[in-house]
Image (cartoon, rainbow, N blue to C red; front, side, top):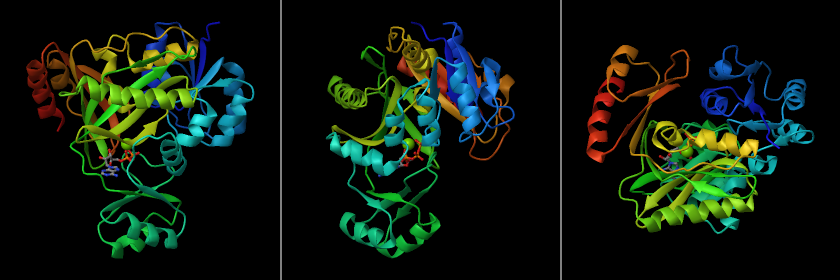
Amino acid sequence: MIRRRIGVLGGGQLGQMLGQAGVSLAAEFIFLDPAETPSARHVGRHLRAGFADAAGAATLAAACDVVTYEFEHLDLPTVQAIATTTEVHPSPRALKIVQDRIRQKEFLAAAGIAIAPFAAITSAADLTAAVATLGTPCLLKTARDGYDGKGQRLIRDPLHAAAAWAELQQQRCVLETFVTFSRELSLVSTRGRDGAVVFHPLAVNHHRDGILRLSRAPAPDVTAALQTQAETMARRLLNELAYVGTFTIEFFHVGDALIVNELAPRVHNSGHWTIEGAVTSQFENHVRALMGLPLGDPAATGHAAMVNIVGTFPDRHRLLALPGVHLHDYGKTERPGRKLGHVTIVDPTASGLEQRLAAVLALIE
Ligand SMILES: Nc1ncnc2c1ncn2[C@@H]1O[C@H](COP(=O)(O)OP(=O)(O)OP(=O)(O)O)[C@@H](O)[C@H]1O
Ligand SMILES: [Mg+2]
């Protein structure tokens, strides 16, 4: 059975790119989103409703063969309600674990995955004790709703712990040791309904002010052993979750080892390069998995870089006049710190990529 009618909770840029990938497979999309003009509205129907609106969720479920989501900060009971009538992938169980940093860390620890030492924080007393145990510097992160580095406080001195806790509104949090890494890498993989798994090559990611700015893929200087290390962790987690769809792991590279920073139960910003830089993109493979079709080849076709456009949009004429530039415009209004679009460039050689990238960065930075 081919499931063509795909519902998506969220109609932002990830929904937009999922829809674009699905069009060529004759998938039909409905995006549930409270916004008046969500980015994905041009690639499917827009169902305007809140994410915790039971009637909206029921309408979506009734109209679709399968429902997915483009972000994890969803109301879990609403997603569970959809799953009583319509398949939801990734599963509500995967969502429940990943959307909460405490559950996510406990899940990773139980699976024997390398993570930074952490503690669950639900009171000021927890925090005092955990800062003493883990030492400083350490990072306090809200258990829920964090993205782009929001909801995090670096604690350099135990004396600052109380202020950090107050600034985060005394919410449930995790405290983790600050990891001194050489770089940040991510692995985007997809698991099909039949249990087949495909992995894109590791990407290397650069953040500024907590926001991803630049990814290069395949990441330079990745040994076969390192790629295998990442894939082994991903396969274990995907199988344990009986996962269907695209899945992302963010890593810290420390020495020869990978330490997991966090998981995303979805397509990911650090995988946007796959649209033009891989045989099959993360979006197409997610759609294929949802539809019950075989997964496509995740291999890179060259050297790719992806640059995010954040806050203000550069001149589109100058940008697109550069050779080989692929522009993805999310059609959003400018706002400081908001992801408005991205550019991907692919080149047959590493040095060629760097030349093209320098020209792009000169316009975007
Ligand atoms: N334990 C840590 N040690 C050192 N740096 C860290 C640590 N945790 C997070 N960071 C830095 O902060 C960035 C954002 O952290 P994290 O990925 O946890 O947050 P996020 O808000 O969920 O981000 P996003 O959703 O945008 O990926 C990381 O990519 C990394 O650069
Ligand atoms: Mg992150």
